[in-house]
Length: 360
Image (cartoon, rainbow, N blue to C red; front, side, top):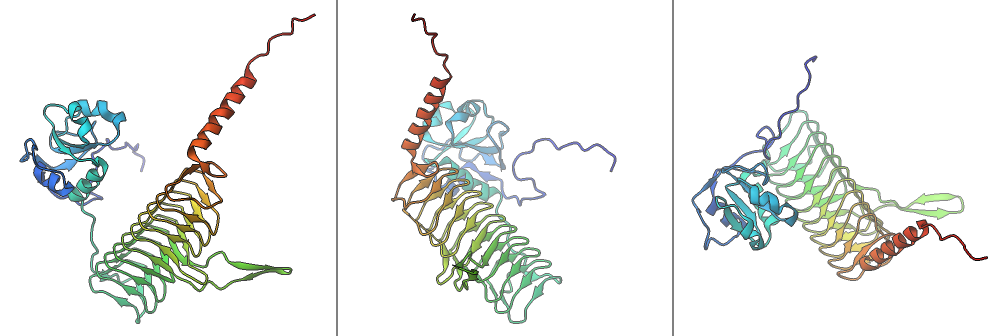
């Protein structure tokens, strides 16, 4: 093509070429979906046809405000309705309806699913898929082109296996799971509503070997990977199977792209691990922990419930429940920032010119 490429104008969320659409819905319908109270709701019958950011929303759109840095955009928005915290009600334009909730971002998440429900499996096995005769596939499941399903594998109702994905022998995948293109899963049991994004690798050998005077001897990795209901595994992330016990990913755990989980790791429900983080073998991570981007955890640690680990932190010791750490080696976050400030002051002091010596 010789014609110059002209990028499309910025569009509202939910391009119909890529996302299913639903609606329109009344403001009252949206509020019910969010679990927001209807008492005092102005213009509950107003119809809303889509979602949009504050700065581009129109009278038929719903938007949201969760971060006070964007409060000026709230004052200028033309949105028909805005999901927001009660503290921002005073900045809402006169023509806009407020859908009030203490958790606006969670409300936005529910609204986005209402208007753009995720696509379900298209039942059937593609002719180009390779399915072992001993595999058990629910009739409502979808097997995409080039996918490989091994002997004894089980694919649950409403689950979809993307193009060129490989499901190894004996793997169990629960109901309504999504395994995207080119993911590979072996030695694993997945619960219901699990999402595995493209290129993820689950169930391969853990990094285990004995060191001898003549070299290394591989240790057989005889465990599995167990993934709980509603977990999500990001693109190109890797989860090693256990050695003598299982690697366990709890219910509702969200693992971002490019994350490494070592063998025998146990991650509690609701934990979030952000991109490029790494967890070494046999570490136990509690529930609702946040591990920020590029953090590294050494092996055999115990991380308490609700701990928060900062970006690029190097965690080498156990952390108590609720601990907040940063830096490498990781230390309490207040101490870390005190050190940063102190170091900055020392550097700045070192740059100040010294007074000339005027003594005889």
